[in-house]
Amino acid sequence: VGRHPTPQAGPTKPAGVDRIVAIASGKGGVGKSTLSSNLAIALARQGRRVGLLDADIHGPSQPRMMGVSGKPASPDGKTILPLHGHGVTVMSIGLMMDPDKAVVWRGPMLMGALQQMLGQVAWGDLDILLVDLPPGTGDVQLTLCQKTQMTGAIVVSTPQDVALLDARKALDMFDTLNTPVLGLVENMSMYVCPDCGREAHIFGHGGVRDEAKRLNLPFLGEIPLDLDIRLAGDAGTPVALTDGPVADAYKALAKRLID
Ligand code: ADP
Image 1: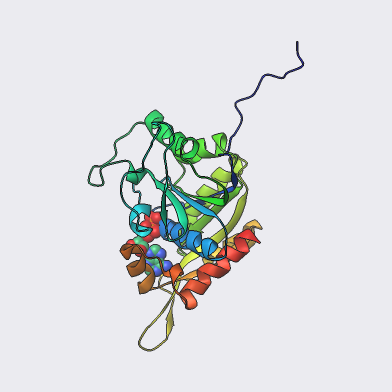
Image 2: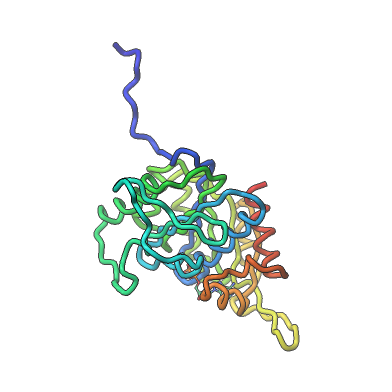
């Protein structure tokens, strides 16, 4: 009696997965999903075994961005087999539902879906599992950080003040949840005119770097506002698959994250 401590329902992690890193943003539309897919591909191109879990329950975009479709199979009715796109193991709540139907799930159902995607998907052996979170500071973030052994989170923001304001809330949430922030990323940092080559800072520039410095957090890098990023994402062939300055920006980010 007393020799075997009662097992605690502490945070868990799928067997075989080394690190779990969440990609978060304070608000929608700042490019969190675009960053997730490109980062996943950049890591895979560097020889890492990468998984991408699309947990953006209300706006799952990874099936389109990663060019995967079809319902994941479950031969034994329990384990769910993930899909594969561009060398990345992919699972998205979007693959389990009708793409034209809006999701009006209640909290517990949502959490059930998330737990299922983490616990029942046959992720296999992965060096890193990226989780594309919904924007903001809601239940999904809370549950994930409390129930899963997170390595940490990356917060992406545009340099605009309003976006930064929301990013601060996300940073504060991770602080409260004791989830380490691995770094900040500035997206849509600058625009280089394809005709004249002049740099324009449509949403400002440097705000996220300054914020990282102020908070003593790593700054992982900046991604330009670039038409190819949008086009390639929409086409299901993210720009990180190519070679060039934009793909290099993601490559550098991936290196900084994993080294
Ligand atoms: P979020 O996941 O934060 O809601 P998305 O990744 O879906 O944002 O991006 C929103 C839109 O902006 C998408 O159409 C995407 O293609 C586009 N986008 C994201 N990052 C960039 C970028 N650096 N340059 C150009 N377009 C971008």
